[in-house]
Image (cartoon, rainbow over the protein chains, first blue to last red):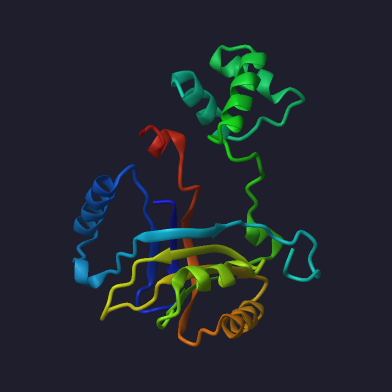
Length: 68
Length: 161
């Protein structure tokens, strides 16, 4: 699990899970669900189809416009 | 990639030591010369194993405390093209296409937005929605951050193929 955030929604806990293979991912997810006592239909499993962009930059000077 | 590369990657993931000769320092820890660490690191960068060296910034310390994940419903629009429009905005730091769950969850594009306040972020999202021609979306602001680390950590999940 690389990211785990509480968010303002009925689905209130959002986390990202990555593993070496689909099988490994499935195994970890099953283990998590067992440990937290949730069933598949109580969660949303949203596998990545395409990583379109990952580019985290922040404006360093306060008061400047948001976009770098 | 051999075990030495893995050792060096693991040391680099802990951060570049803030000393005049960081590669010497890493070499000292691992029992190699600094020259060897540097040469291996250059090779790892040339082959694309290391994407780049950069600082990991704590955005909250910069006053960027509003963070939203937006789930977008494409409503028949092509996901790839629409995703490219969303991704073109500098304020979008992440843009992913994910599998929808027909009948349960119709959202297939996800973007992450950051800003100094919810209002700023909401305004930006409205602007982007207008430009992309999307009207059905969920704005999910984070209220607590329990974990935020890189996806790949060599010691925990990086030893696979």
